[in-house]
Length: 461
Image 1 (cartoon, rainbow, N blue to C red):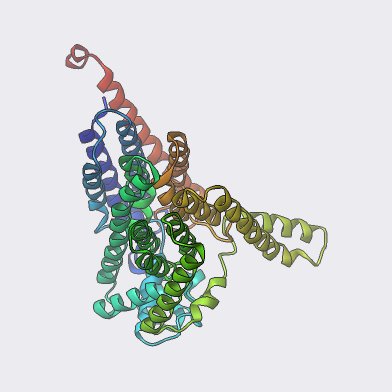
Image 2 (cartoon, rainbow, N blue to C red):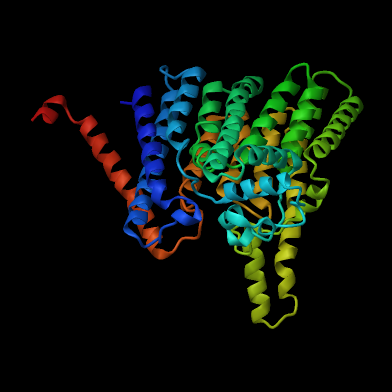
C-alpha cells in the first residue's frame, strides 16, 4: 500500500544515507580526500548509491500516489521537497566539483581579476587548489549575474571554504524555491496538473542530487526563467523579459525564454512587432545594467565558446572522437577537424530542430521552450546529467499527456545513477561498489515489499 507518509520516510531515508555516504565518498576538499580504495571511501560509495536508489523508489511511489484520489496537494508536495532536501544541506558537495570553481571565480571577481581571460590558477591559494585540474586554466563560462552573486558571497565569507560552500548551496536552494513556486502557475496555464508538475519538475531526483547536493548554478538560471515566464503570463511582460534575461546572464541557454515571452504577449493580444520590440529593449537594457553592475565587462560573450572537456560524453563529441580516430587510422590530415565539424553540425541541427519545434508548438510556448532546451542539452557540445533539467523543468509544467511524463521520468531514473559522488571518472572497482550499493537497496526494498504483502497472521508467526 502506497501512502504519503511512507513516501516521505523512504525519501528521507534515501537522502540521509546519501548525505552520510558523501562524507567519505563525495567531492570533498582536497585535504579531506580519501583514496578510492580506502575502506571508508568504499563504504561511503556503497552508501551513496544505496541512498540514491531509495530516493528514486520514493519518488516513483509518490508519482503513483499522484494518480490516485489520495493525491497530495501542491502544498504537501512542497513539504515533501523540504523534508527530502534537509539532510543534504550540510552534506559535502556531491556528484561534481563545480561549486569549488564557482567560489574561486567569485573570489577572482572580488579581487578585480579578469575571470574571463584567466582561470582560477591565476587566483592561486587554497580555493584554486580545490578546482578540478582540467578547469584551473579555463576562463569562466558563466554570465555576469552569477559572477556578481559569487563575488558577493566571496566577500561575505572571506575565502572560508565551509562558509562558502554553505552559502553557495543556499543560493542554489533559492533557485529551487523559485522553480517550485513557478511550476503550479505554469502548469495551470498549460492545462496540466500542478501536483504532477511539482512531482516531475521539483521533487525530481536530479534536482535533489545536482541542484541541492551539487549546488549547481543551473538552479538560479531555472528559477529566474520560471519566475520570468510566470510574470509574462500576467500583466508584466517587461518584468518577464527582465527576469528571463537575468537567467540568461547566469547561463546562456535561458535566452530562448525570450521567445516564449514574445509569444505569450502576442497570445494576449499585443501586436507581434510591439512584443518583439518591447522584449528586445528590456533584454538589452537589463544586459547593459547587469554587466555594468557586475563589473566583469563583456568577456562573457567570448566565454560562450569556452572549450569543453576532451572526454565529454555529448553525442556530437562522441561522434567527433570516433570520426577523428577513424580518419587518423586512415592517415588523413583531417582528423583534428572531426570534433569541431561534428560540434558545428550539432549546432546547426539544434537550430533547425528548435525552429521546427516553435513552428509546430506556437500555441504552447511553455512546452515548446521545454523541448527546445532539451534539444540544446542533448545536441550541444557538452552534456552533464543536470543539463537534462533545462528542458525537464518546463516539460514537467506543460507535458500534454501522462505518457510524456512517464518517459521523462524514466530518463531521470537512469541519469540519477550516471555520476559518481566524487564527480570524477569511475574505475572498475568503483563501478562494482556503486552497483553493489544499488543492488543492496533493491534487495531491501523487495524484502520490505514482500513483508508488506504478507498476511498479518504470517507476519505474526
